[in-house]
Length: 302
Image 1 (spheres, rainbow, N blue to C red):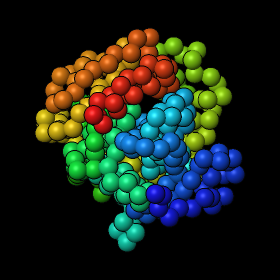
Image 2 (image 1 turned 120 degrees about the horizontal axis):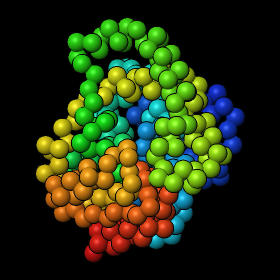
Image 3 (image 1 turned 90 degrees about the vertical axis):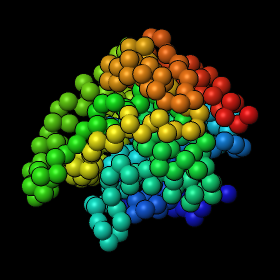
Image 4 (image 1 turned 45 degrees about the vertical axis):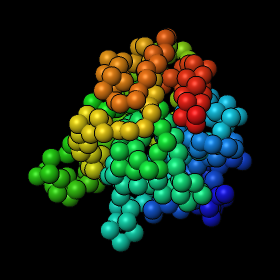
């Protein structure tokens, strides 16, 4: 059962991009969320991409996973074709990690489901674990691929005393962020791959295009302002659901040692190390990723 949805987005939002026939839009918590859904049966699998990327990051595994279960992938707030409204207490729009977690659950419910297995890569893994801890009744299991739990987005924090001044200087800081990200984007994304030749120039250009839509640096700045230490390392021991931790053998963004630690500290977790792979196993080694996830899903539904 699918909730009420919109089949197109304003042209100003998508900059005349060609949407695939499978693309859909649905209003959730003040955002016009761009998503894809395919397959049938249980469990529902929800894919959460990492920062600077988009729904495109699942293109090599989405259809294959949908052969055996129902799969949803969506563009997280501040990324891809999902709308980028400014934060507002009136509309409830927020870019905090907790608000993004709320959106995951609201999306699941609005599309007619009660619970899901969350599959998160990088900061998508951060949000997957956060969501499972906050909404255990709606999460059946977790797949954490190169998940940022002990570093980066999960532990960064904007000092409370500096936040008002930083907000007041938003136009300046967002322009600075735009300049820095634009200059470093290609190098940063290539760093996610172990074998750089596997990332085609066309795919890199597409990822860049997915990010740099409209006033993208402003909403990315709003996302940055809301970062705070989630203390997931202290909270993960209360996790009751089964988990699969996946790491690329040569992940330089979230070192494989961090994922190995995560698998050892997260209750009911197993570890898969993918050889010849960097930060994005679903990109570099999609077949190994699919096999690992499918095996895990079989155990979840047993």
